[in-house]
Length: 126
Image (cartoon, rainbow, N blue to C red; front, top):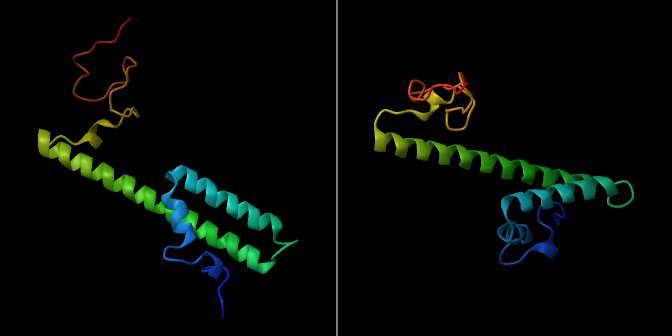
């Protein structure tokens, strides 16, 4: 039986159409493409496609979730690789120790909010 939801025959080839679309776009654009298809299939299910349209919407939602999970995992892996390289370069310094202030680099420009080794070097401006 032909699977029109997961592998529609009219989108098959040497590479699946969805993979070619993803390769042609930046990640945020591809996420928008997926969201648009989710909306389209949910919007039209009562007038066209019924259950199959809902299944297609679910397929695109699952693809969107997998795409975002992969991006988050890559971001975490990239951060850990940078952190490891930095620790090798400067020794036992751990950037997470200086993230308490909530500022991206751990040093906040607001007086009295700084946390980290430079606190004593820079006095607040009155």
